Length: 78
Image (cartoon, rainbow, N blue to C red):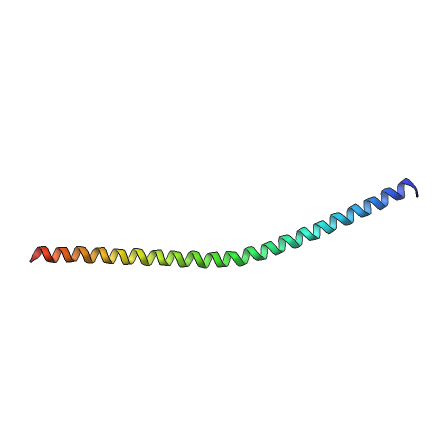
């Protein structure tokens, strides 16, 4: 076997390994992208839920505080 044939086979093997790794990397990125989209949806719904609960807590606390102030105002008038 000549040196040129050896170099040609070596290049072909190296190119194959590169393309194989490239395809595996592409598959990994595609899989991670799919997981990211799914988890983004889940985390978005969780964020919306906690924001709604926070708003309800603030609203409930505000109503309770105003009832306390109204009660004190009525007692002072009597």
